[in-house]
Length: 158
Image 1 (tube, helix red, strand yellow):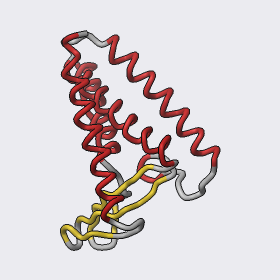
Image 2 (image 1 turned 90 degrees about the vertical axis):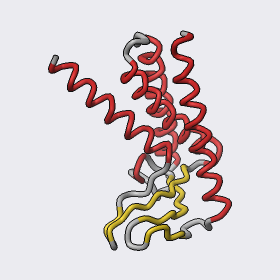
Image 3 (image 1 turned 60 degrees about the horizontal axis):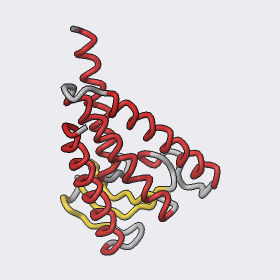
């Protein structure tokens, strides 16, 4: 257990980064408002996402969607944490991937419970073609999932 303490520090650091960046956006950019960082490529836009990652199922204000996402997040988080504690400390890549996924789930869960929506703000685009809005927590989930996928593919080949 002691050897897994650094992963908890990573969770703490990234969770603070997630919540601070969301608070900064909410405090300095009006809902729907835009700050252009790199014209034609990167903006910060304050979006309230009441759906899942990248806005999937959002915009309806349907209570069943919110409840379903809350339950799904709790189940996924429980699964990730059980797997985390069962993973040997020598499997650093797997532990990091699980740490990132847990961090992202917690970050968005905090928003969902306290506000009823998740604050998204990263707006990558090329001219008018926009990638869906996301935040630090979404990035953690995505990077963690891709890392696990890569590790499992390479592990299977060996």
